[in-house]
Amino acid sequence: MAPNDPKEAAASGGGGFFASIASSLSNFGSAMSKSVNGMIGYEGLEVINPEGGTEDAEEEAKKGRWKQEERDSYWKMMQKYVGSDITSMVTLPVMIFEPMTMLQRMAELMEYSYLLDMADKTEDPYMRLVYASSFFISVYYAYQRTWKPFNPILGETYEMVNHGDMTFIAEQVSHHPPMSAGHAENEHFTYDVTSKLKTKFLGNSVDVYPIGRTRVTLKRDGVVLDLVPPPTKVSNLIFGRTWIDSPGEMVLTNLTTGDKVVLYFQPCGWFGAGRYEVDGYVYNSADEPQILMTGKWNEFMSYQVCDSEGELLPGTELKEVWRIADNPKKDKFQYTHFAHKINSFDTAPKKLLASDSRLRPDRMALEKGDLSTSGYEKSSLEERQRAEKRNREAKNHKFTPRWFDLTDEVTTTPWGELEVYQYNGKYTEHRAAIDTSECIDEPDSRPDFNPWQYDNLDAE
Image 1 (cartoon, rainbow, N blue to C red):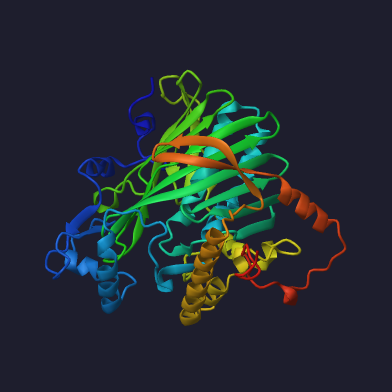
Image 2 (cartoon, rainbow, N blue to C red):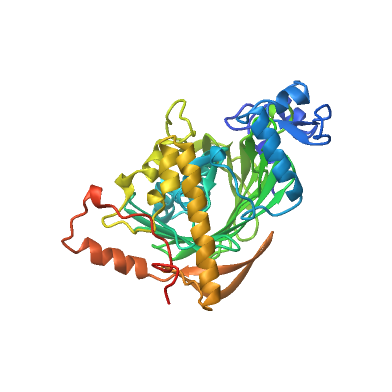
Protein backbone atom coordinates (compact mmCIF):
# COMPACT_ATOMS: atom_id res chain seq x y z
CA MET A 1 0.00 0.00 0.00
CA ALA A 2 1.27 3.47 -0.86
CA PRO A 3 1.93 6.00 1.89
CA ASN A 4 -0.82 8.59 2.39
CA ASP A 5 1.47 11.38 1.21
CA PRO A 6 3.73 10.69 -1.78
CA LYS A 7 6.18 13.25 -0.43
CA GLU A 8 6.96 10.96 2.49
CA ALA A 9 8.68 8.68 -0.03
CA ALA A 10 11.10 11.37 -1.16
CA ALA A 11 14.36 12.52 0.30
CA SER A 12 14.14 15.77 2.19
CA GLY A 13 14.57 18.81 -0.05
CA GLY A 14 13.96 16.96 -3.33
CA GLY A 15 12.88 19.02 -6.32
CA GLY A 16 9.13 19.64 -6.38
CA PHE A 17 8.54 18.57 -2.77
CA PHE A 18 7.27 20.69 0.12
CA ALA A 19 9.91 21.93 2.50
CA SER A 20 9.02 20.91 6.05
CA ILE A 21 7.91 24.40 7.03
CA ALA A 22 5.67 24.72 4.00
CA SER A 23 4.15 21.34 4.73
CA SER A 24 3.36 22.43 8.26
CA LEU A 25 1.84 25.70 7.18
CA SER A 26 -0.38 24.02 4.59
CA ASN A 27 -2.11 22.09 7.33
CA PHE A 28 -3.52 25.28 8.79
CA GLY A 29 -5.89 25.77 5.87
CA SER A 30 -6.16 27.27 2.44
CA ALA A 31 -5.00 30.66 1.24
CA MET A 32 -5.73 33.58 3.53
CA SER A 33 -9.28 34.85 3.03
CA LYS A 34 -11.13 37.75 4.55
CA SER A 35 -14.50 39.38 4.16
CA VAL A 36 -14.79 42.92 2.89
CA ASN A 37 -16.70 44.23 5.87
CA GLY A 38 -15.98 47.94 5.67
CA MET A 39 -17.06 48.51 2.09
CA ILE A 40 -20.71 49.46 2.05
CA GLY A 41 -22.79 46.90 0.15
CA TYR A 42 -20.09 44.21 0.10
CA GLU A 43 -20.36 42.77 3.61
CA GLY A 44 -19.35 39.12 3.74
CA LEU A 45 -17.78 39.09 0.27
CA GLU A 46 -14.67 36.90 0.41
CA VAL A 47 -11.29 38.15 -0.83
CA ILE A 48 -8.53 35.53 -1.05
CA ASN A 49 -4.86 36.49 -1.17
CA PRO A 50 -2.78 33.76 -2.88
CA GLU A 51 0.36 34.97 -1.11
CA GLY A 52 -1.42 34.80 2.22
CA GLY A 53 -0.28 38.32 3.05
CA THR A 54 -1.49 40.40 5.96
CA GLU A 55 -2.97 43.30 4.02
CA ASP A 56 -6.32 44.54 5.18
CA ALA A 57 -9.07 42.92 3.14
CA GLU A 58 -10.21 46.31 1.85
CA GLU A 59 -6.71 47.10 0.56
CA GLU A 60 -6.40 43.71 -1.12
CA ALA A 61 -9.87 44.11 -2.64
CA LYS A 62 -8.83 47.34 -4.38
CA LYS A 63 -6.07 45.57 -6.33
CA GLY A 64 -6.62 43.97 -9.73
CA ARG A 65 -7.60 45.13 -13.20
CA TRP A 66 -10.91 46.82 -12.33
CA LYS A 67 -11.35 50.53 -11.85
CA GLN A 68 -13.51 51.53 -8.87
CA GLU A 69 -16.56 52.51 -10.92
CA GLU A 70 -16.29 49.47 -13.20
CA ARG A 71 -15.95 47.11 -10.26
CA ASP A 72 -18.97 48.59 -8.48
CA SER A 73 -21.11 48.48 -11.62
CA TYR A 74 -20.14 44.89 -12.38
CA TRP A 75 -20.85 43.75 -8.83
CA LYS A 76 -24.34 45.30 -8.96
CA MET A 77 -25.02 43.35 -12.15
CA MET A 78 -23.56 40.04 -10.95
CA GLN A 79 -24.77 39.74 -7.36
CA LYS A 80 -28.17 38.39 -8.44
CA TYR A 81 -26.40 35.36 -9.96
CA VAL A 82 -24.74 34.16 -6.73
CA GLY A 83 -25.18 30.38 -6.49
CA SER A 84 -26.02 30.03 -10.19
CA ASP A 85 -24.36 28.38 -13.18
CA ILE A 86 -23.21 31.38 -15.24
CA THR A 87 -21.54 29.45 -18.07
CA SER A 88 -23.67 31.07 -20.78
CA MET A 89 -26.28 33.23 -19.05
CA VAL A 90 -24.26 36.39 -18.44
CA THR A 91 -23.04 38.92 -21.01
CA LEU A 92 -19.57 40.03 -19.97
CA PRO A 93 -17.56 43.12 -20.97
CA VAL A 94 -14.68 42.58 -23.42
CA MET A 95 -12.25 44.26 -21.02
CA ILE A 96 -11.95 40.96 -19.14
CA PHE A 97 -11.43 38.89 -22.29
CA GLU A 98 -8.33 37.66 -24.07
CA PRO A 99 -8.19 37.52 -27.91
CA MET A 100 -8.79 33.77 -28.03
CA THR A 101 -11.83 31.47 -27.94
CA MET A 102 -12.50 28.37 -25.88
CA LEU A 103 -11.87 26.27 -29.00
CA GLN A 104 -8.39 27.74 -29.25
CA ARG A 105 -7.85 27.05 -25.55
CA MET A 106 -8.64 23.41 -26.32
CA ALA A 107 -5.94 23.45 -28.99
CA GLU A 108 -3.45 24.97 -26.56
CA LEU A 109 -3.18 21.59 -24.83
CA MET A 110 -1.35 20.35 -27.91
CA GLU A 111 1.81 22.38 -27.25
CA TYR A 112 3.62 19.42 -25.69
CA SER A 113 2.04 16.72 -27.85
CA TYR A 114 5.48 15.14 -28.22
CA LEU A 115 4.81 13.61 -24.78
CA LEU A 116 2.00 11.53 -26.31
CA ASP A 117 4.38 10.51 -29.09
CA MET A 118 6.77 9.28 -26.40
CA ALA A 119 3.95 7.47 -24.60
CA ASP A 120 3.21 5.60 -27.80
CA LYS A 121 6.84 4.76 -28.48
CA THR A 122 7.75 3.37 -25.05
CA GLU A 123 7.33 -0.33 -24.27
CA ASP A 124 7.12 0.32 -20.52
CA PRO A 125 3.40 0.43 -19.55
CA TYR A 126 4.09 2.60 -16.51
CA MET A 127 6.32 5.11 -18.30
CA ARG A 128 3.50 5.35 -20.82
CA LEU A 129 1.37 6.84 -18.05
CA VAL A 130 4.21 9.10 -16.88
CA TYR A 131 4.47 10.67 -20.36
CA ALA A 132 0.72 10.88 -20.92
CA SER A 133 -0.10 12.38 -17.52
CA SER A 134 2.69 14.94 -17.92
CA PHE A 135 1.06 15.94 -21.20
CA PHE A 136 -2.21 16.65 -19.40
CA ILE A 137 -0.40 18.50 -16.59
CA SER A 138 1.37 20.76 -19.08
CA VAL A 139 -1.73 22.73 -20.09
CA TYR A 140 -2.30 24.05 -16.57
CA TYR A 141 0.38 26.69 -17.08
CA ALA A 142 -1.89 28.24 -19.72
CA TYR A 143 -4.98 27.73 -17.57
CA GLN A 144 -3.62 30.04 -14.88
CA ARG A 145 -4.24 33.03 -17.15
CA THR A 146 -7.02 35.11 -15.64
CA TRP A 147 -8.35 36.56 -18.91
CA LYS A 148 -11.56 34.97 -20.14
CA PRO A 149 -11.63 33.44 -23.63
CA PHE A 150 -14.59 34.19 -25.92
CA ASN A 151 -17.45 31.69 -25.91
CA PRO A 152 -17.60 30.08 -29.38
CA ILE A 153 -20.57 30.73 -31.63
CA LEU A 154 -22.62 27.63 -32.47
CA GLY A 155 -20.94 26.03 -35.50
CA GLU A 156 -17.66 27.88 -34.95
CA THR A 157 -14.52 25.84 -35.59
CA TYR A 158 -10.80 25.97 -35.01
CA GLU A 159 -8.29 24.00 -37.07
CA MET A 160 -4.53 23.74 -36.62
CA VAL A 161 -1.68 22.22 -38.62
CA ASN A 162 2.10 22.70 -38.74
CA HIS A 163 2.64 21.45 -35.19
CA GLY A 164 4.07 18.03 -34.36
CA ASP A 165 2.91 16.54 -37.69
CA MET A 166 -0.55 16.72 -36.18
CA THR A 167 -3.97 17.86 -37.37
CA PHE A 168 -6.39 19.42 -34.89
CA ILE A 169 -10.06 20.31 -35.39
CA ALA A 170 -12.58 21.58 -32.82
CA GLU A 171 -16.21 22.60 -33.25
CA GLN A 172 -18.86 24.21 -31.07
CA VAL A 173 -21.55 21.53 -31.19
CA SER A 174 -24.11 22.99 -28.76
CA HIS A 175 -25.00 26.44 -27.49
CA HIS A 176 -27.33 25.59 -24.58
CA PRO A 177 -25.60 24.00 -22.81
CA PRO A 178 -22.28 25.21 -24.27
CA MET A 179 -20.43 22.14 -25.57
CA SER A 180 -17.35 21.72 -27.73
CA ALA A 181 -15.84 18.68 -29.38
CA GLY A 182 -12.25 18.24 -30.51
CA HIS A 183 -10.08 15.75 -32.38
CA ALA A 184 -6.32 15.64 -32.89
CA GLU A 185 -4.30 13.01 -34.68
CA ASN A 186 -0.82 12.12 -35.90
CA GLU A 187 0.99 8.84 -36.57
CA HIS A 188 1.26 8.06 -32.85
CA PHE A 189 -2.07 8.97 -31.27
CA THR A 190 -5.63 10.15 -31.60
CA TYR A 191 -7.07 12.59 -29.08
CA ASP A 192 -10.82 13.01 -28.67
CA VAL A 193 -12.68 15.28 -26.28
CA THR A 194 -16.25 16.32 -25.60
CA SER A 195 -16.18 19.34 -23.30
CA LYS A 196 -18.93 20.94 -21.24
CA LEU A 197 -18.30 23.26 -18.31
CA LYS A 198 -20.52 23.71 -15.29
CA THR A 199 -19.97 26.70 -13.06
CA LYS A 200 -21.14 27.97 -9.69
CA PHE A 201 -20.84 31.71 -9.09
CA LEU A 202 -20.05 32.48 -5.44
CA GLY A 203 -19.84 36.27 -5.45
CA ASN A 204 -16.14 37.05 -5.75
CA SER A 205 -15.20 33.60 -7.04
CA VAL A 206 -16.49 30.90 -9.35
CA ASP A 207 -16.09 27.13 -9.19
CA VAL A 208 -15.60 25.46 -12.57
CA TYR A 209 -16.48 21.78 -12.98
CA PRO A 210 -15.06 20.05 -16.09
CA ILE A 211 -17.96 17.87 -17.20
CA GLY A 212 -16.26 16.27 -20.15
CA ARG A 213 -14.77 13.12 -21.59
CA THR A 214 -11.18 12.99 -22.82
CA ARG A 215 -9.78 9.89 -24.50
CA VAL A 216 -6.36 9.26 -26.03
CA THR A 217 -5.69 6.21 -28.17
CA LEU A 218 -2.03 5.24 -28.62
CA LYS A 219 -1.79 3.70 -32.05
CA ARG A 220 1.06 1.19 -31.71
CA ASP A 221 -0.69 -1.04 -29.15
CA GLY A 222 -4.22 0.36 -29.35
CA VAL A 223 -4.09 1.46 -25.72
CA VAL A 224 -6.96 3.78 -24.65
CA LEU A 225 -6.41 6.35 -21.88
CA ASP A 226 -9.24 8.13 -20.07
CA LEU A 227 -8.83 11.40 -18.14
CA VAL A 228 -10.74 12.78 -15.15
CA PRO A 229 -9.32 16.25 -14.28
CA PRO A 230 -9.76 18.18 -11.02
CA PRO A 231 -12.19 21.12 -10.70
CA THR A 232 -10.92 24.67 -10.84
CA LYS A 233 -11.59 27.71 -8.65
CA VAL A 234 -11.21 31.27 -9.89
CA SER A 235 -10.79 33.64 -6.93
CA ASN A 236 -11.12 37.43 -6.69
CA LEU A 237 -13.19 37.88 -9.83
CA ILE A 238 -14.22 41.43 -8.98
CA PHE A 239 -12.36 42.44 -5.83
CA GLY A 240 -8.62 41.81 -5.56
CA ARG A 241 -6.08 40.18 -7.85
CA THR A 242 -7.71 37.39 -9.83
CA TRP A 243 -5.96 34.02 -9.56
CA ILE A 244 -6.71 30.40 -10.35
CA ASP A 245 -6.18 27.13 -8.49
CA SER A 246 -7.17 23.51 -9.28
CA PRO A 247 -7.02 21.57 -6.01
CA GLY A 248 -7.96 17.90 -6.14
CA GLU A 249 -7.16 14.69 -7.98
CA MET A 250 -6.36 14.07 -11.62
CA VAL A 251 -6.88 10.44 -12.61
CA LEU A 252 -5.63 9.02 -15.91
CA THR A 253 -6.69 5.41 -16.45
CA ASN A 254 -5.44 2.90 -19.00
CA LEU A 255 -8.80 1.36 -19.96
CA THR A 256 -6.98 -1.46 -21.78
CA THR A 257 -4.88 -2.74 -18.85
CA GLY A 258 -6.38 -1.18 -15.71
CA ASP A 259 -3.17 0.67 -14.82
CA LYS A 260 -3.64 4.28 -13.75
CA VAL A 261 -1.93 7.39 -12.45
CA VAL A 262 -3.43 9.46 -9.64
CA LEU A 263 -1.95 12.93 -9.17
CA TYR A 264 -2.99 15.28 -6.38
CA PHE A 265 -2.99 19.03 -7.01
CA GLN A 266 -2.17 20.62 -3.67
CA PRO A 267 -4.44 23.51 -2.64
CA CYS A 268 -2.81 26.87 -2.12
CA GLY A 269 -2.07 27.13 1.60
CA TRP A 270 -1.27 30.04 3.89
CA PHE A 271 1.52 32.29 2.59
CA GLY A 272 1.32 30.46 -0.75
CA ALA A 273 2.47 27.12 0.69
CA GLY A 274 1.86 24.25 -1.70
CA ARG A 275 0.67 26.36 -4.59
CA TYR A 276 1.35 24.64 -7.94
CA GLU A 277 2.52 21.41 -6.25
CA VAL A 278 1.48 18.10 -7.86
CA ASP A 279 2.33 14.65 -6.47
CA GLY A 280 1.15 11.10 -6.90
CA TYR A 281 1.83 7.61 -8.17
CA VAL A 282 1.51 5.43 -11.22
CA TYR A 283 -0.31 2.25 -10.13
CA ASN A 284 -0.61 -1.15 -11.72
CA SER A 285 -3.98 -2.86 -12.16
CA ALA A 286 -3.67 -4.26 -8.61
CA ASP A 287 -3.41 -0.68 -7.23
CA GLU A 288 0.25 -1.14 -6.30
CA PRO A 289 2.53 1.90 -6.76
CA GLN A 290 5.15 1.58 -9.49
CA ILE A 291 6.45 5.11 -10.07
CA LEU A 292 6.31 8.23 -7.94
CA MET A 293 5.58 11.51 -9.80
CA THR A 294 6.13 14.98 -8.42
CA GLY A 295 6.54 18.55 -9.62
CA LYS A 296 4.79 21.87 -10.14
CA TRP A 297 2.07 22.22 -12.75
CA ASN A 298 3.42 25.61 -13.84
CA GLU A 299 7.06 24.47 -14.16
CA PHE A 300 8.00 20.79 -14.47
CA MET A 301 7.21 17.16 -13.70
CA SER A 302 9.64 14.47 -12.53
CA TYR A 303 9.42 10.77 -11.70
CA GLN A 304 11.26 8.05 -9.79
CA VAL A 305 10.73 4.29 -9.64
CA CYS A 306 9.38 2.93 -6.34
CA ASP A 307 8.44 -0.40 -4.76
CA SER A 308 4.91 -1.69 -4.18
CA GLU A 309 4.80 0.18 -0.87
CA GLY A 310 5.56 3.49 -2.54
CA GLU A 311 9.13 3.65 -1.22
CA LEU A 312 11.82 4.80 -3.64
CA LEU A 313 14.09 2.05 -4.91
CA PRO A 314 17.79 2.26 -3.96
CA GLY A 315 20.01 3.17 -6.86
CA THR A 316 17.29 5.09 -8.68
CA GLU A 317 17.10 8.83 -9.10
CA LEU A 318 14.53 11.52 -9.71
CA LYS A 319 14.34 12.26 -13.45
CA GLU A 320 12.65 15.18 -15.15
CA VAL A 321 10.10 14.28 -17.82
CA TRP A 322 8.72 17.71 -18.77
CA ARG A 323 9.59 21.37 -18.23
CA ILE A 324 7.77 24.49 -19.36
CA ALA A 325 9.31 26.19 -22.39
CA ASP A 326 10.68 29.72 -22.19
CA ASN A 327 7.91 32.30 -22.52
CA PRO A 328 7.67 35.95 -23.59
CA LYS A 329 8.40 38.47 -20.86
CA LYS A 330 5.71 40.94 -19.79
CA ASP A 331 3.21 39.70 -22.35
CA LYS A 332 -0.06 41.59 -21.96
CA PHE A 333 -2.18 38.44 -21.89
CA GLN A 334 0.50 36.17 -20.38
CA TYR A 335 0.63 34.24 -23.64
CA THR A 336 3.23 31.60 -24.35
CA HIS A 337 4.99 31.56 -27.72
CA PHE A 338 2.69 28.68 -28.66
CA ALA A 339 -0.43 30.68 -27.72
CA HIS A 340 0.64 33.38 -30.17
CA LYS A 341 1.01 30.68 -32.83
CA ILE A 342 -2.54 29.53 -32.15
CA ASN A 343 -3.83 32.98 -33.07
CA SER A 344 -1.50 33.18 -36.04
CA PHE A 345 -2.42 32.15 -39.57
CA ASP A 346 0.96 30.34 -39.66
CA THR A 347 -0.73 27.36 -38.00
CA ALA A 348 -3.79 27.59 -40.27
CA PRO A 349 -4.22 25.10 -43.10
CA LYS A 350 -4.69 25.98 -46.74
CA LYS A 351 -8.25 27.17 -47.47
CA LEU A 352 -9.15 27.85 -43.84
CA LEU A 353 -12.79 27.21 -42.92
CA ALA A 354 -14.82 30.43 -42.79
CA SER A 355 -16.07 29.34 -39.36
CA ASP A 356 -12.56 29.45 -37.83
CA SER A 357 -12.02 31.35 -34.57
CA ARG A 358 -9.09 33.30 -36.00
CA LEU A 359 -11.54 35.14 -38.27
CA ARG A 360 -13.86 36.42 -35.51
CA PRO A 361 -14.02 40.22 -35.82
CA ASP A 362 -14.36 40.74 -32.05
CA ARG A 363 -11.31 38.60 -31.37
CA MET A 364 -9.23 40.36 -34.02
CA ALA A 365 -10.25 43.81 -32.75
CA LEU A 366 -9.32 42.91 -29.18
CA GLU A 367 -5.97 41.58 -30.39
CA LYS A 368 -5.32 45.04 -31.86
CA GLY A 369 -6.35 46.71 -28.59
CA ASP A 370 -9.61 48.18 -29.96
CA LEU A 371 -12.01 47.42 -27.10
CA SER A 372 -14.83 49.55 -28.53
CA THR A 373 -14.92 47.72 -31.85
CA SER A 374 -14.46 44.38 -30.12
CA GLY A 375 -17.44 45.02 -27.85
CA TYR A 376 -19.61 46.07 -30.79
CA GLU A 377 -18.63 43.04 -32.86
CA LYS A 378 -19.17 40.68 -29.92
CA SER A 379 -22.69 42.03 -29.41
CA SER A 380 -23.41 41.73 -33.14
CA LEU A 381 -22.32 38.09 -33.21
CA GLU A 382 -24.38 37.24 -30.14
CA GLU A 383 -27.47 38.93 -31.59
CA ARG A 384 -27.05 37.07 -34.90
CA GLN A 385 -26.76 33.82 -32.95
CA ARG A 386 -30.00 34.57 -31.09
CA ALA A 387 -31.73 35.43 -34.38
CA GLU A 388 -30.55 32.14 -35.90
CA LYS A 389 -31.93 30.25 -32.93
CA ARG A 390 -35.34 31.93 -33.29
CA ASN A 391 -35.35 31.19 -37.03
CA ARG A 392 -34.33 27.57 -36.45
CA GLU A 393 -37.06 27.01 -33.87
CA ALA A 394 -39.71 28.71 -36.00
CA LYS A 395 -38.90 26.37 -38.90
CA ASN A 396 -38.55 23.33 -36.61
CA HIS A 397 -34.98 22.86 -37.82
CA LYS A 398 -32.15 21.32 -35.78
CA PHE A 399 -28.53 22.30 -35.74
CA THR A 400 -26.25 19.52 -36.95
CA PRO A 401 -22.49 19.75 -36.34
CA ARG A 402 -20.38 19.31 -39.44
CA TRP A 403 -17.38 17.37 -38.14
CA PHE A 404 -18.77 15.53 -35.10
CA ASP A 405 -21.80 13.29 -34.57
CA LEU A 406 -23.87 12.98 -31.42
CA THR A 407 -23.73 9.38 -30.18
CA ASP A 408 -26.14 7.43 -28.01
CA GLU A 409 -23.48 7.24 -25.29
CA VAL A 410 -23.98 9.16 -22.06
CA THR A 411 -20.98 9.13 -19.74
CA THR A 412 -21.04 9.86 -16.02
CA THR A 413 -18.55 12.29 -14.50
CA PRO A 414 -18.08 13.33 -10.86
CA TRP A 415 -20.08 16.49 -11.64
CA GLY A 416 -22.86 15.26 -13.90
CA GLU A 417 -23.75 13.31 -17.03
CA LEU A 418 -22.48 14.13 -20.49
CA GLU A 419 -23.72 13.33 -23.98
CA VAL A 420 -20.73 12.25 -26.06
CA TYR A 421 -19.89 13.55 -29.53
CA GLN A 422 -17.71 11.49 -31.83
CA TYR A 423 -15.42 12.62 -34.63
CA ASN A 424 -16.99 11.49 -37.92
CA GLY A 425 -13.87 11.55 -40.12
CA LYS A 426 -15.31 14.04 -42.60
CA TYR A 427 -12.71 16.69 -41.78
CA THR A 428 -9.92 14.28 -42.70
CA GLU A 429 -11.59 13.75 -46.08
CA HIS A 430 -12.17 17.50 -46.50
CA ARG A 431 -8.57 18.34 -45.69
CA ALA A 432 -7.16 15.58 -47.92
CA ALA A 433 -9.18 16.87 -50.88
CA ILE A 434 -7.84 20.39 -50.41
CA ASP A 435 -4.24 19.32 -49.78
CA THR A 436 -4.18 17.29 -52.99
CA SER A 437 -5.72 20.08 -55.05
CA GLU A 438 -3.76 22.75 -56.85
CA CYS A 439 -5.61 25.66 -55.24
CA ILE A 440 -3.50 28.57 -54.06
CA ASP A 441 -4.24 30.13 -50.70
CA GLU A 442 -3.92 33.91 -50.95
CA PRO A 443 -3.45 35.63 -47.54
CA ASP A 444 -5.48 38.64 -48.68
CA SER A 445 -8.43 36.47 -49.72
CA ARG A 446 -9.29 35.03 -46.32
CA PRO A 447 -13.07 34.70 -45.86
CA ASP A 448 -15.23 36.69 -43.49
CA PHE A 449 -16.18 34.87 -40.32
CA ASN A 450 -19.19 32.68 -41.11
CA PRO A 451 -20.29 29.91 -38.74
CA TRP A 452 -23.95 30.42 -39.60
CA GLN A 453 -26.47 27.72 -40.43
CA TYR A 454 -28.38 30.05 -42.73
CA ASP A 455 -26.97 32.33 -45.41
CA ASN A 456 -29.73 34.71 -44.42
CA LEU A 457 -32.38 34.57 -41.73
CA ASP A 458 -35.14 33.91 -44.25
CA ALA A 459 -33.47 30.74 -45.55
CA GLU A 460 -35.68 27.72 -45.83
